[in-house]
Length: 206
Image (cartoon, rainbow, N blue to C red; front, side, top):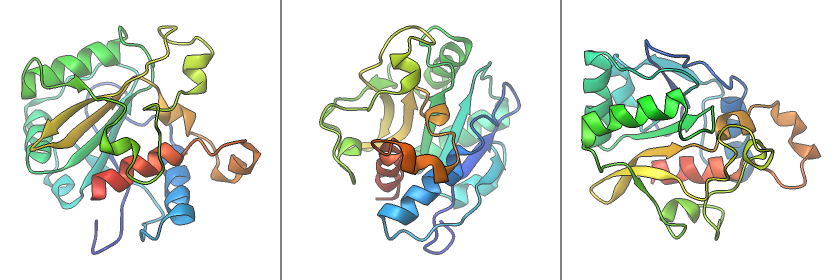
């Protein structure tokens, strides 16, 4: 936040491809305007994971398809940011639990927070009720239902919690690509699929 204004921060890391789903942030920002009273900055902000600037913001997003291998500065910042109360939403664009992004990211988390820090969260978790109600847990994506990636529908998300709150929310469901469309096309959907993105941001800001 800068003052009371929410900024969608994307983390740039040196390995892999950090700049996926480029229309997704503006789509979620439009949803925040449509459904909430949260003031928003209209453009996403890209910040190097190695930069101390990220500590100015309570919410960050990290995604990709390829290898995730933080350098020393990136790893130190990621761990410190989360331990100081920051929130990172991480989305695997491969929607594949055995893909390179998933395996390498989960290895990074185990190295930074311990082998068992990243855990499945129940469908009753507060993130599923922070604004809209998702009684069955995380909503499915069209990529899962079409049998892409690992050909599985993931009925859970994983998280690292610090002091009883999520610090890292981790998805294999590819929400980033699911929400990667011009927000003006939302009117053609039977149900706005960005509503869960609103929940994630509202939870992060509470």
